Length: 196
Image (cartoon, rainbow, N blue to C red; front, side, top):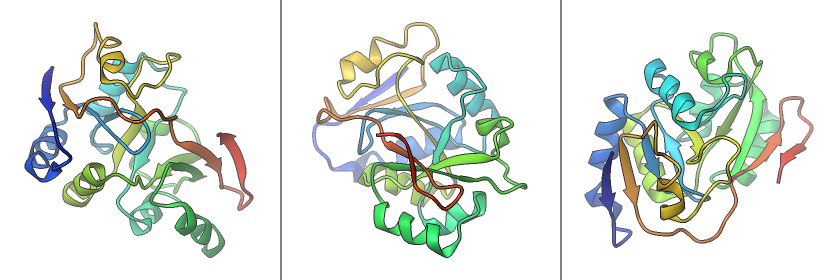
């Protein structure tokens, strides 16, 4: 497990490293606008399988994705004008929206037999730059073992991964105390809060 320590928020210096890592099919621990997250290329089946193993997460529990913009979100989910208006009000930001998955969606490993997919545009410079440059959706899930609390303190994050380990850690120190993203079910055009 390689660790990159960042003392300042000058992410320009390190952008190349996580992008190369994701392109190689590696799994990253990365800061986000909420908590530390586990990231991988959402289109790479082996990488997605590894995230399930690293988190000890059941395949029946779907994973969500980060995307760079609403246009990309529309590639994977049905989004009408009313839904798009809600998304534009909340994105970028700490809101994961559950939307109806398109039938030809290539990310079926993430969501299993579910007809929905969780999508978010984060509000975090490093992750947004990664998304722009990799030009693919990225798995978004908190960096913790399943059923353990999500963490903002890097020490608490790292001590959870003793068996299966991610490949690369981007350590910027402790994040402000925060919760994972709010989850809102928007698939039926009605707003239903799943996690707040």
